[in-house]
Amino acid sequence: MKFSQTFIPTLREVPGDAVIVSHRLMLRAALLRRLANGLFAYLPLGLRSFRKVEQIIREEMDAAGALEFKPPVVVPGEIWKESGRWETMGEGMLRFKNRLNADFVISPTAEEAFTAILRDEISSYRQLPLTGYQIKKYRDEIRPRYGVMRGREFTMKDAYSYHANEESLEKTYQDMGRAYRRIFKRCGLTVIPVRADTGAMGGTGSEEFMVESEIGDNTLILCKTCDYAANVEKAACKDDFERRSIDEAKAAAENIPSIKKIDTPSVKTIDELCRFLKTGAKQFIKTLIYRAENVELDLTGAPGASTLERKSPAPDAPKMYPEAFFAVLIRGDLDVNEVKLAAAVKASEVSLASDEDVIRLTGAPVGFAGPVGLTSLPIIADYSVTSINDGVTGALEKDTHYEHAAFGRDFEPFMLTDVRTVKAGDTCIHCGAALYEKKGNELGHIFKLGYKYTASMNFTYLDEEGKSHKPAMGCYGIGVDRTLASIIEEHHDDDGIVWPMTTAPFHVVVIAIKYDGAVKAAADKLVSELETLGVEVLLDDRDERPGVKFKDADLIGIPLRVVVGEKNLPKVEVKRRIEKENRLVEISAAADELSRIVKEELAALNS
Ligand SMILES: [Zn+2]
Image 1: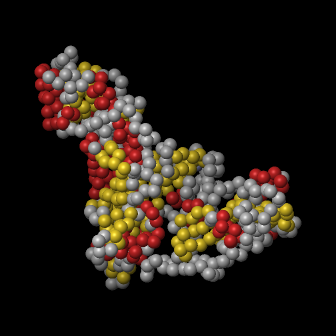
Image 2: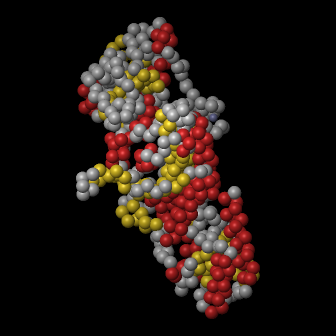
Image 3: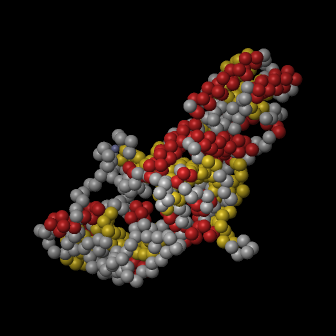
């Protein structure tokens, strides 16, 4: 490929809106251009690397026995209504009506599409297991930023597997985990595998693949000594208190004075209160009022829940409360983790209640909520509260608190659970060492879904005895653009990108100092020899100064550079992008040597 005949409009200036390295370099090296906020076009050079990442993913999926499908990008709203997610997907899903007023969705994910396609085709256990995948999806990202790291339109590989039993699901889940490790290795990426089962959720069926990134969406909690790695959303730590049952707590409160209401005028924050009462935040029972959406937790008999509306979004979907409020208790020095809370109450979303809701539900201004005498909503208590037997908490009245409040004696929760946000410095649940934090971006996620979609969308098969069952399901996603951007985040220097051989747009760039006469003849011959050997070559034939060509070659980051100039012929300069020094090689031997290096580097990454 000749530089003059392709389209590589490199930029010297750093585009102002590009904050992170990969975004800057993808624009400067002419891999990408922005069409609108969060919407990018790959230019020919970028598309070459994009296709290579996509192909690595495709090869590993195929090797793991998954079959590629191509569902439409536009899918009917009907199947989303069947699964119940028409109601729960929120603003990130782009919906529209066509001229016949029918609902459609620009597919953000394809559980519904695959389940709808396969339920009509699969009727017997003999047809299972089956894993299908697609490469494409769209999400109407609310806060697009960081280039393709978080775009609106983005490409993902999604695979979905269907199984006649849990063992079969487990096998495919493990195969996919191995395939993912191979994909990232082949791309030259260092990933941190984060298992959900190392956290508080208890399950064994989920693993995220993260890359370290200063602008990561995720906070990772890692252990200094063992391999514990968890997303902060799910991270657990060793208790720094004694976890007590209601009876144990009652016994522990035996010699504690009775609960007493005290005046706390113009004291608002926990800090002010601690100073006022000369006590520590650990003695304080913090009470936060949360609003939750689409709550599947059964609240029958819970305080304040008798008037809540409960409905089913689809005939076979679980019943849920479209809106419910909870009082969440946690020790004063700790913070509530909203993802853990949402999981505990089985809600699609939780957020702090508005001031108006707090006043309506607690009968007091914001800042005086407390569990004692609270009957208007269910109480969810973090385990940390169970050890507080002489605590301070809001008294549901302006400028008043309770002291000597004891868990179990003075109040009982509707649910006890772990909603604590784990922080750096907390103690590793496995080995007891200190935990630390890192920012990370999720590149991939493998997940045992279970029966959620096959149940709500009525997908059944018959077993050997002719009995009807629903298949168990797994899902496996990986972001193609994100993986590409992450390769650049990990492989660059001050001059530009430093591509690993597997995903470089070209293996070799041949720079002709002055593309004319003997130099032209030598460069053309070398390119032709390399191409015959299967090496992908970009020939810089432009009528530009050598300095410009060198700068572009470094910026674009092609792994091997050959300079053909009159001065050195019949020798040429060969330089690896990762090295500073070049060396002279006889042009007659150059093609074989370059081809050998390309093949070795490909083999090392692909092994
Ligand atoms: Zn540890």
